[in-house]
Image (cartoon, rainbow, N blue to C red; front, side, top):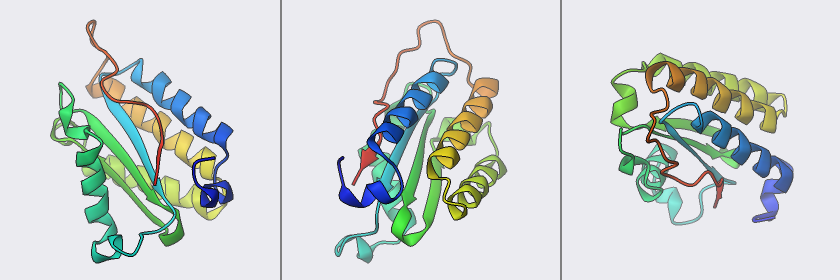
Length: 152
């Protein structure tokens, strides 16, 4: 286990299932999905709003480096009940904000019920549906970013 706090929400097997779901979705689209998880902001991170940390992770994790600008970051701070979905400019040009807002609402609903894994897997699957419509997999597509879940 990477971080002790995480066991309150997800198991190592759950992280593997999430990675597998990301990989399955990415086989159908040229989109790239990453997941960044935190328990809460540390002392220095409290100088920033959670959204600012999400933007920082988006950049640090290379989400803007995809060929078609199709990176999506799911950013979760469990201890502060903060959830954010950030998408690169290629996605925002074709998929409206309401799609991501609806996914965040669904994630919050599942988390309130303690269904952490289910909530994450469902939004990844639904992201895949939206991405496949607008960004189908190309013949020369490669997995541009790691599918590993980042745990801070």
